[in-house]
Length: 171
Image (cartoon, one colour):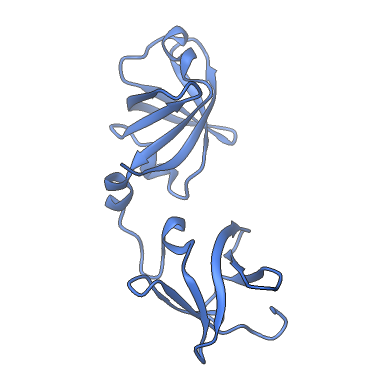
């Protein structure tokens, strides 16, 4: 089964079984809502299935409480761990048109509109107003493409490719 990271338990919070989570998802409201099931991947290699029964924000963290774990002693062993969801949970979230999960984009081949291959997307950087797709090129430096309509012309997941217009100044 494939899993996707959604957060990292970095510490406990208080005495009543809450944990402090650093989110690593673009959808924290959906991923950490009451009733959601997550899997904690512990540092020792073991996994624990958990159900969220409480959530609140605190500074840049999300504080979670899990069903049946009501004291600090019940959750101490969870730190540090990575919270993940499975493929079925990931795909249950409906995305807006022209919106993609990172794992759908990374690895796609990039072509100019004239058919010339540019390279392969190897990473995505979240830089505020729009993402920047990092394209690995043969025998050249990586190309940084902003995820804007003027540059990203078409994303074709079925054919594993992206069509782009590399504007002057980007190469």
